[in-house]
Image 1 (tube, rainbow, N blue to C red):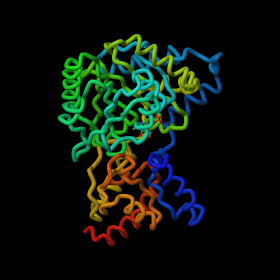
Image 2: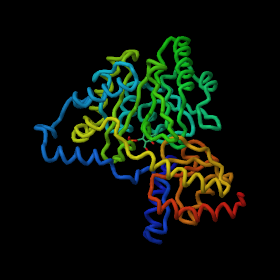
Image 3: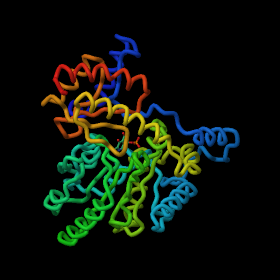
Image 4: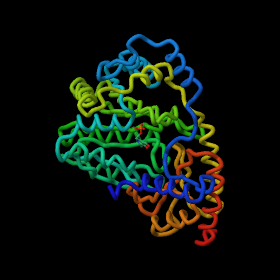
Amino acid sequence: MTAGSWIRRMFEEGVVLKEQYGEENVFDLSLGNPIMEPPAEFRRELIRLAEDPIPGMHRYMENAGYVATRAVVAEYLSAESGITFTKDDIIMTCSAAGAINIVLKTLLNIGDEVIIFAPYFPEFINYIENHDGFARILRTDEQFIPRLNALESAIGPRTKAVLINSPNNPSGAVYKKDFFRSLGEILDEKGKEFGKTIFLINDEAYRKLTYDGIESPQVWSYYPHSIVIASYSKDLAIPGERIGYVAAHPELAEHDQLISGFIHCNRIMGFVNAPALMQHVVRSLQGVTVSTAEYQRKRDFLYDNLTDMGYSIFKPQGTFYLFPKSPMEDDVALVNELRQWRVLTVPGQSFGTPGYFRISYCTDDRTLEGSLNGFRKVAEKLKLS
Ligand SMILES: Cc1ncc(COP(=O)(O)O)c(C=O)c1O
C-alpha cells in the first residue's frame, strides 16, 4: 500500500493544502480525473431513459451484459476494424479496472507471468498480483515505446500474457501500426517456440484521446490472440459511472472457454454485471467523445510553457498526461520542490520509472495557468535555462 499509492497520496495532500491555503491557491495536477462534463448526447440519453424508462431496466441481466448493448458494440468494432465481431466477443464490465481483473483472473494460474512495460499504470501490478500472477517489468525506449528485442528475450515458458497500454498512462505515447505488426510477429513466433498461446491484452482506456490528427491503431489485424480492454471513463468523462467492456478477437485461442471464464469472473468477483443504466446509455453513444481539441489545447499550453522554462518533455500524442524528465535526480525531491509552490504532481517512481514525474492536465485552465508560477520558480532555482 505504501509503495503503490503515490497518486492518491498527492490527491489527499491536495485536499489538506486546499483547506489550509484555499482552493484557488492549490494547483492539483496529480489525478487523472477528467474535469470536463460528459458530452450533451450523454445527458440527453440519461433524460430520455429517465422520462421513458424501459420496463425492467433496473433488474439483473445476463452476467455478460445486455445482448442489445453487446451487439451494438460488436457492430461498432466490426465497422472500425473490418473484422466481424458478434455479441459473443463482448462482455460489458465495470470499466477498464473490472475488465482487466476478470481477464487476468480467467487467464492466470499461480506464478504465471504477465509482461508489462515501465512506465506503467501502477494498478497493473496489483491487478496481476490479485490473481497470483507475477509482473515481469521491461523498460521502454526514450519515446516510451516498448523495446521489442527485450520482449523477445524476456518471453519464457511461464509467460501467459503481455499487457500493454496505448495510448499510454503516464507517458502519453501512442504505439504505431509497425509496432503492433512486429509485436504480433514476436508473440506468434514465441508461442510456437514454447508450444502455447501468449495472449496480448491492450488496455485502451484512452483510445479516443489522441491529438495532432493521430489515431490509435488497434491490435485486431496484427494478432488474433488479442483481448482489448475498453472504457467509457475518459472518452465520455464518466469515470464514476464504471462502464466499459472486454472485446475478444473472434479467432482468439480457446475463445468460447475464455469468454465463459470472463463472464463467470464478472459474476464471482462481485461485480455481477456492469451497471444496468450505463449499459442502456452507452448503447447509443458509440463513437461519441468529449472534445479532444480542448485537451490538445491544454496539452499545448503546458508543453509550450514548460519547455520554454527548460523542462525536458516528450510531446505526448494521447491521454491527458505529460511525463517530463525530472530536472533533479530524485523525482520525489522534485515533486516536493513543486509542492512548496502548491503544485501537485506524481513522482515517476510510482510508474516504475524514477527520474521522471507525471503531470495530469485534465483540469481547468485556472489550475493550469496558476501552476506555471511554481514550475517557473523551481526551474529558476535549478537553473534550467
Ligand atoms: C491505463 C489505465 N487503465 C485503466 C484505468 C482504469 O480506468 P476505468 O475507470 O475505466 O476503470 C485507468 C485509470 O486511470 C488507466 O489510466
